[in-house]
Length: 173
Image: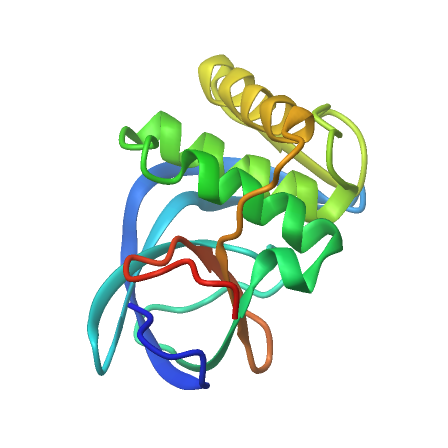
């Protein structure tokens, strides 16, 4: 996916691995959405990521200009969510695991690191109990991590930002 840290265009191809869940934003916008890994392509090939912007849905075929950054350097909630992605992205393989990863990322970005109650806050979610439990485990484990690891924060112009692991190098750019 990433060989340079310059802006590039990427196209959303499909929802890859995960499942539909019910989410609620700010206590009012309740709807069903896909939670899991998403497939993209750019001039270098194809890659997977998780959504880092629950408030800006993406459509199949949509093209975005991506501005990559080291999540640790971005800091704050992006760094905390990036640590979850860095630690658990490769391990999340099943639909439940990928949905849990996505929910954990959204929860941390919306409500802050260490907040694992999916029944309160700006971001709330309903899914099967194994997805919620695993998402809570991801959040708690990452919050206890004293050496956060970076992910690639793919800030997209106009929303639709993503978080991914860098398959080439996690150098400190």
